[in-house]
Image (cartoon, rainbow, N blue to C red):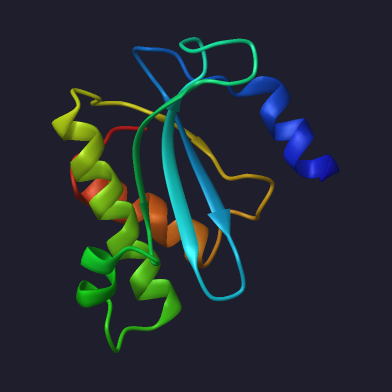
Amino acid sequence: QRRHARVRKTITGTAETPRMNVYRSLNHIYVQVIDDRAGDAKGGVTLAAASTMEKAVKEKIAGLSKTDAAKVVGAVAAERALAKGVEAVVLDRGGYLYTGRVKAVADGAREAGLKF
């Protein structure tokens, strides 16, 4: 929690470059593209999201490892963000080390055309 708070102190999503938040649980991975300046005082507005829990994504990741599934989730989130007009983001790794599934999400998003 301290690591996450330390990272969030410096990373803020704007309309031009929203924040791409990654949450990693034991079996699943979740990605949100968030504009922190929009919305009310409680939080920002989610522009795009993807996770391994979605039915459309589950069909794509059947039989893949968790790391390969994370790459697919990153690509799906990037496609949805690009459809909303978002071309560049800042990566909020959520305090997780930039390795494994978190890196796979970033690689998948970059390959899909998102810049960060």
